[in-house]
Image 1 (cartoon, helix red, strand yellow):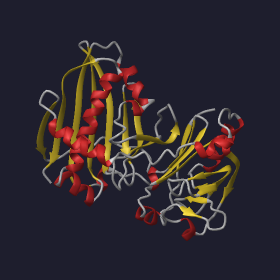
Image 2: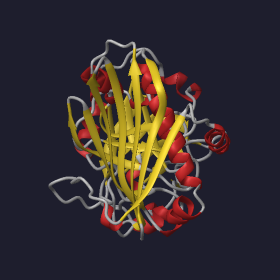
Image 3: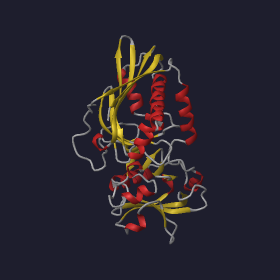
Length: 367
């Protein structure tokens, strides 16, 4: 049985209602992993063993106002609905009711409806998992903790701001310059309804590079990149911005797969894999992301050293983020601390020794 994540479908006419309740459709996901089903839906989530699933049924269409916006509780049978479209979804009935609508578990639900994009694939994966289930009994369902929405904490964000301003020249070396133009690498060849390309951004453009040199490691660049490609959580600070796979095989990375890096706050950072090779992979931003652009992670080998590089080309995703990023600088500092920590954690992933400070180069357009 494979572990897999399934993204949600997006009904454009429901998107404004979803965003009103801080439900970003591109950041919603249903995951089947280690004999457990976990569904993430904005500030709501549900977790239960697959052995607690009694029946899986394809349903829809739905009355739009019964599914639009936040998680919906049925007054008739206490079923809960996580929906981003009114066209088609999957109703999952449970043996033992499961908590979701509120975290204390006072209200539990005998069923859940989710509007994933790949309905048939999701039903097939659930049935396959149920057929091969072992271990957890249905009676233990109520004891499974709700995983939560996997977002960074406000305390971690505040601590990261302090950490950045305390960093010395021995830890970070930063060079900045103004430029007239920034050339952005291509995203993808086919159009996607939920992409958020560079040209859709707001304010000046930024080209940033984070570079760390690593010695005393015999891990080649191909193996080094693969170690984080199959498990991004190894290299990303989970307290500041936990990473969640939203779509695709868990433990693999293929073009078109989707991920979410979620800082604290009412925003998201959903991305999709737009390119990959033996020593690098590249993400493109999706709608609802803090930024509009692309970011690439790569490793280079040479002169007895390994170099890890994070390079981004982006503009702010909207006016609010432009204010936080370019004017107030809060988002810019949090982003810098996140990627510097990733450079430092990458050194640990390959079991090497960091040589010199993390080098940051920032180019910003004049307007």
